[in-house]
Image (tube, rainbow, N blue to C red; front, side):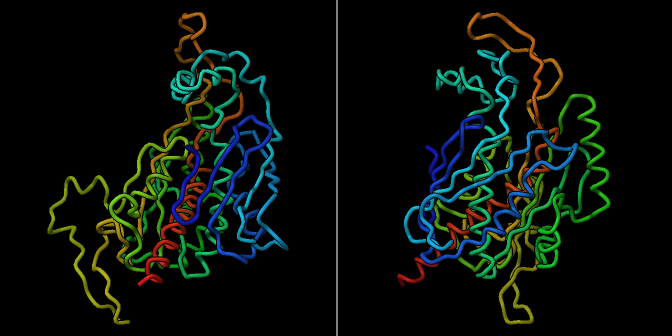
Length: 365
């Protein structure tokens, strides 16, 4: 249920308000020196920083308990444990038996009756994504060494839009720039406007959503395993495991519906280095589920945070009575701000799993 991966596998356990959350990783190269400074850096990006994010700040003091010797992988399962230290269960005392609108509470209470007694979102909480960031940092370390880079930016928050990637030519310097900031946008002037939108929603006890755009560059031609382990299938599977993700598209995505085939076919040419590329990149670097060597471009839609201070209607599953719910506690008014770093991390993991499979298939030939 909580395991994913064909070549590098992760198994996740724990809940938002349990003593700790944990992850077991198998399939990493033996002798890989884990760059813990990189892990710390990526965790710091995800961690809440200011008034735009939740007041629940966890220190994320993770510990590797198995699979390392002198900070290098032994080939055995690599286990990481992260304590939940800043827990306030009283915030949920008035919600026992009452499913919060927009949350997974109701279907979870039916599927897992004990969920009614839990606090927070349990296994469905965004707290679990701290583990995504850890495996993403390890994947980043490996893939960067192979010349493969992933970069994400906040393309849109509510009505404010950033400049999109140029899909046929995403430069390394753009990826580097996005990597160095907690609030990654291409057009820096849009950050102020996005922040204002979030603060306006927060002041109204409401929340807003956003779109995250990601580019993968340096990916070799032919990565992916059709039919069910294509690049799109793998990345979509992972992205939809992030709480609040409600849409994923590659290349022109849903805009294909209003296009002519003649306009989006991405014709081929040899570039100045003798490499085959395409004039355009409407298909987002993917054809038939395989990478074409062009930048892979994916956009992820994040819905508005479901926990808001505005009174909403629900029911009490114990008394069978209708109730009005006002959710207190500590919540992000816009998940996309921190979610951009989670999306970046999980795509790094998905690409690593695909690349290792591609390398293994080449070695067998």
